[in-house]
Image 1 (cartoon, rainbow, N blue to C red):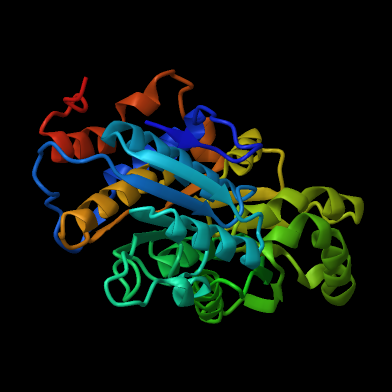
Image 2 (cartoon, one colour):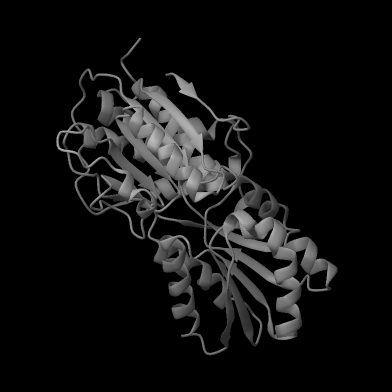
Length: 359
């Protein structure tokens, strides 16, 4: 497989913690629609492009690695570009991908509405097949996308709130960090607020609208302001992404608030899993998505679209990852290679569970 990578993006082996989360999610994968993939046959190689909203987002980077692996299996030529968190750059990358006659484009973590007006509209113009990861509020097909690959955001939000409600504290005060630019974040936030409002001893102190790409810069001042406003009433932080947790612990410890508990409603980044496993972080948990599986699913949805087939209807289940879960896992090597979703897709694609029949 040919692949062109942006500067700064390196291939890494998935950690055992990530792999374990993927294994649990893969085992719980649910299907609500057609799953039969186009039959095994010799296919023309495809030219596809993965456009990342921001590779600093660990979920996007992990999904890309899974997608890249699947493209290698399929013999596709893959181009990758990084929007660095800027909508204008994402749009420019999309325009270039269309102009280059890419047959398939993956929207990696940005709204489909960001580029809808850039799709060719001329009669007879070639249109790329589009799939997305977190590109719409719900999993499945949209008028623009062959498929949007994501867990159910409401289910992710509910799992995060369950961990808050389980707190032994008499009163719980929650601040939620979100990014209203993304509809999937808005769905998570609304659901977290709804569930918390049903908890008699829980109080939603506020929702902080902070762009994910600005979190490392803006978080310290925001935490200081929140402590001044809420004081001891404030006990928990919920966030729609692990990135907010990257800058949580140091400022809060400096203010003497090491008692605040952080829980992320997505995505299970490598950094988050490492600090949760340590048991010394203020981040207690993350609701991990099976990003490797989802990367392969993106390739499968494109393949179905190229063959004129409907989307798979597959929706992977999120996993609540806590210190107790991670510390109970063995550090056995090679677990990544044994995950069943790879074998499932190889069987569907090639009729051979051991891999592609190509030389």
